[in-house]
Amino acid sequence: MYVLPNRRGACDPDRVLRRARLVALAVALGAGLLAVPGVLPDAPPEPTPPPVPASPVPASPVPASPVTAAPTGSPSPAVPPADAAAGILEDVVPQVGTGTTAVVAGSAPAPGFGPVRTVRVEVEGGLPVDGAVFAGFVLATLNDPRGWGRDGAMTFARTDGDAEIVVVLASPDTSAALCRPLVTYGKLSCRSGPRAVLTFHRWVLAHPDYGDDRTGYRHYVVNHEVGHVLGHGHESCPAPGAPAPVMQQQTKGVRPCAPNPWPYP
Figure 1 (tube, rainbow, N blue to C red):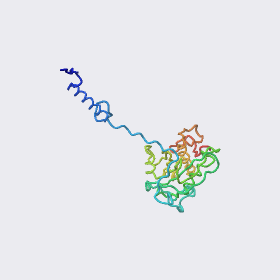
Figure 2: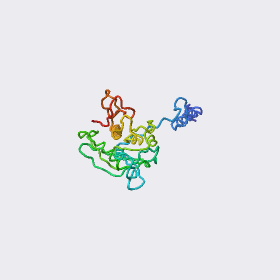
Figure 3: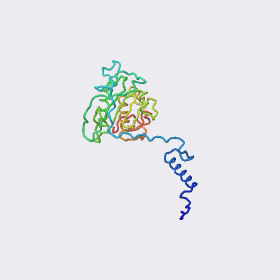
Figure 4: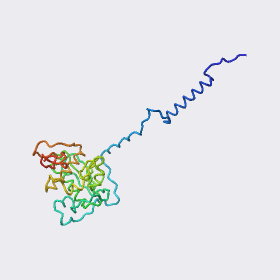
């Protein structure tokens, strides 16, 4: 009778057991079930921050139509004309409004010539602001011949829909939240992605280095923060007595330069 030779490995129990263990180990590693010292991190990795949305920026959701950012009305008789022209109804600064912003309804075509940049204006609820007047001030600043659009470099159109640039006026507390992770204490404005966030604290009180020229400071803060959205970084005072560059952090102090609110004075 012919007897099959005993081929070690074909049915060796020890080898079969070792092979089964190796298979189980591979499965555990592939499924991430096995903890191996020095291989897995001590804590989950930090999530990758979401990218800044590409322009145009979708309009913020609004609760009802027509869209309105703030009640309109006549400014208090105590409000100086220059403040009323910036949309201020009362010279008071609430520490916080409703905590949410709304789009100011309305649109305006871009004047002049050059590449068109679209701008949406938003105001936090609960602030004593005429949203339409504030929006008009912002667009007049941006389209001033001394502004970023000089000589047809660009021109700005207002919209209440999708926009490349969003200018937000918010209370100290809300602006501080919108500016995070920057620490502004509600007294500094900022750029956050495509948004130029203006604190109502400075919109009303301006800055001591501008003296009584609060309008000049308001032009400055619009041009400075929108300048960041356009890609401009901070600049330093070039020489004592010279006009401060609009991208100088003038809210932190203008000296030794002289106050200047315009990119091209």
